[in-house]
Length: 266
Length: 270
Image 1 (cartoon, helix red, strand yellow):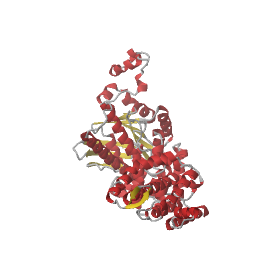
Image 2 (spheres, rainbow over the protein chains, first blue to last red; image 1 turned 180 degrees about the vertical axis):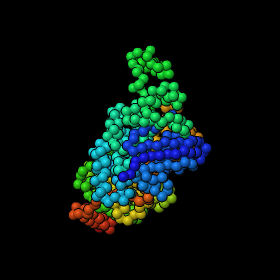
Image 3 (cartoon, one colour; image 1 turned 30 degrees about the vertical axis):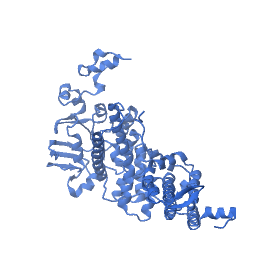
Image 4 (cartoon, helix red, strand yellow; image 1 turned 90 degrees about the vertical axis):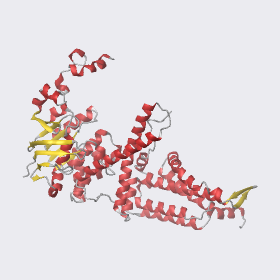
């Protein structure tokens, strides 16, 4: 039995141009947990994610994915057990058709063609996009692209799912559908996001990054209620906790006051 | 009015056309690829003053466009877009080759003019044939059949990637041009400095994207090989299609059909 854990100990990474990406990041995500990774732009979220599947290598510190400490020898096993959904589906969907794209991973990992076919169809069904199999990826809507990206990763049957901004640029209904889909997955999940409402809904735990360091690692409820802390980390209470009534501009918190202009205009 | 919102190429429409379901669409891509190649070789191999002998070859594009239900106008526009290349190649011929070949009424027609016309005819034929091939088959299937014929894999992969990201890149370029024109209030010409900067940005963005794509590929175990699941079969219709057209092309190539027809009708032997 493998343990679907992700453990980072004191990761440091500096980009070649001198920008500090990670500055001593440590955490441990255990089997079956769903963790939100939040922080302002440039806090190091994407840098951290790129470490998780070995796209970047930390200058200092160690990383354990599942049963393996991440190194060049077991890179393939790690990449198979940790499925990564990139922020921009156009980067992830590069094959001629949706079917080929989803089959890309399984075939690379040595599945036979018949097995791969079955796996692809199952993954597409699970992601709710079975009907798109024959379409070229560039013809899809943003929401469809996102679901297909998730299917490409599901087809490799990973133990751990890592998603980078899964709800960005989705319309409300596609976002809702995605959240419901993610709820059904039993994988260990790490979700980097600015969508704090989603984080609240999907993740019991949140890790906050700020300037390449972990500034908080606790229950999502707890973190998102601490207004002073959120403010210090360039974050804001999720909308569902702000208790805004759009019809009463006086109740809007002071830092979003300029929006009241819009509520007056009709 | 500047077409700020209009995509300049609209190549994607060919894929939509390729998704059709006519008899021609259903043929094995390899049959269509071979027929097109034979067609192109036959057309190109005529001598430089050939004009009338080339005309029968128009039968092929016309037949395929009508049977495949393809839009004439759309294909014609695509041919026009690339026509400057052909015109540039042949436009100086009338100046360089002034030997009079024949007369129409009292006007002498020079060899250069005939060869220029011949170049244009061949250009229209070959480009249309290629466009028809893609519109009836789809770019990916064409690439796949090339692979089956043993074209090296890296070459095919390059082609596939080029095609896949052509759309992403034209979109990106369109967005940049739009952003620029919205802030220059359509003042028309773009200064050289701005043009260079736009091109430079496009290149940098492309490089960035290439890196991200490569990462995404690595995450899914890319090791330099592409595997595709496809089945293709050459059956009776494919064989009829290929042999029929190829023998027609050979006939057209070896005999000057219009000349013989003319001889037959007027009864004058040249």
